[in-house]
Length: 166
Image (tube, rainbow, N blue to C red; front, side, top):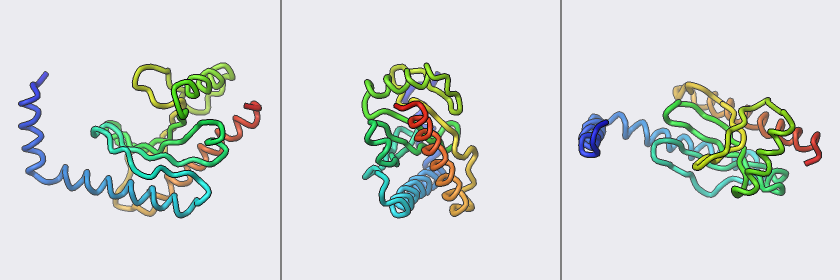
């Protein structure tokens, strides 16, 4: 394992090449634009006021309908840097709500989406890959795919909640 100093030298070298900082800046701009697009297209949904930029591990914002907010649930649209993919996560508004819904989903046997094992630092109940290996050369197509996949995820969760009278 490299020392912090060795990693910092590599970090500096990579930044001096320019591609990483340009890519990161472009990615953050795209995610901010995606957030704005969804906020404008779905004015009845709750959209977080800002992005969580993360530590180059994940970047996300919240986007969810009132039906989930009323149940202390939210959806996060997440870019996972290491796996290079966009995901939608169902999360609780706090750890107690998250545990409650995790237990309800687990006990129901519903397996349409990946149920995440609770633990320290785990921020989701369910996770769904929206777009693996996104193509940033066609941002309109990428945005449309994220939009549609996110709505499908939300609709499935709302249907599950209704069907199970939660």
